[in-house]
Image (cartoon, rainbow, N blue to C red; front, side, top):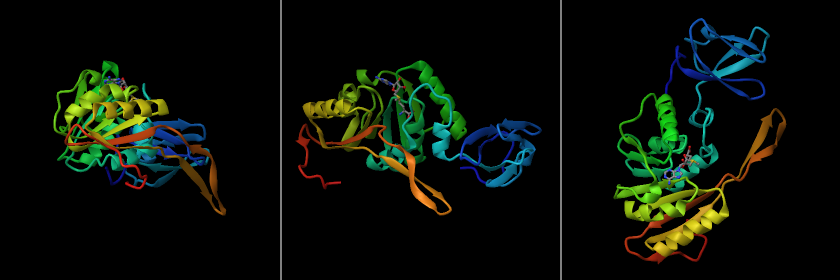
Length: 273
Ligand SMILES: C[S@@+](CC[C@H](N)C(=O)[O-])C[C@H]1O[C@@H](n2cnc3c(N)ncnc32)[C@H](O)[C@@H]1O
């Protein structure tokens, strides 16, 4: 994470009075035009993050560096990234920890890839499979731009995970593709005993098929699924109330643990987490 004054060439975010975000790459001598007027880049370069700038029409905007969530969702994309509300829950639910060896499929925009990279740190590693070359190339560019470079502990692979993977002794597997049950044999082969598999399933029929497949394959336990509904609140002066809109259903977060033997273990109670 960069700190210190804004510098030429970096991408910042201007937040207007209704909360809209405008991404701007700072260039000396240039101007940025928005509906409420013009911003001079020179009024920002060399100034502290958190600076307020004013357009020639008198509109005030807050200038900050984009957060991780803004970086991964704020760019044009060809496929649906995991929503920020789910990213944190996936990292904790799948216990993506420093030093972990993570296998992911599919890479998509690279949003979950980057979240996993942050969580595993330099001592961990992420291998990510993507079936479509154009998506893999776009993810490479997005990750390079967001992190400044492609980190040495990231391996991006063009490949169909349904056909199997060569990785073994993996700590955590993250699946975000339309038919995760087709990846189950590869997951079983790759995950070490005690490892965790996560699958993002927008539809409940996918949850059922994924879990049925794990049961059939055996060697998995602690199957569980949940979803997160995010209800924002408006907090303005004396107005403190739930917002009119929610980020409601995005996907079911499904988890299971790899067992040491070809067994099956599903506790009956709900309170094991
Ligand atoms: C919903 S997107 C993943 C989004 C990603 N999690 C993110 O945060 O940006 C699903 C991706 O899986 C890829 N995919 C689908 N089937 C695949 C397979 N069998 N092997 C590898 N990648 C696959 C698709 O091409 C697509 O890019």
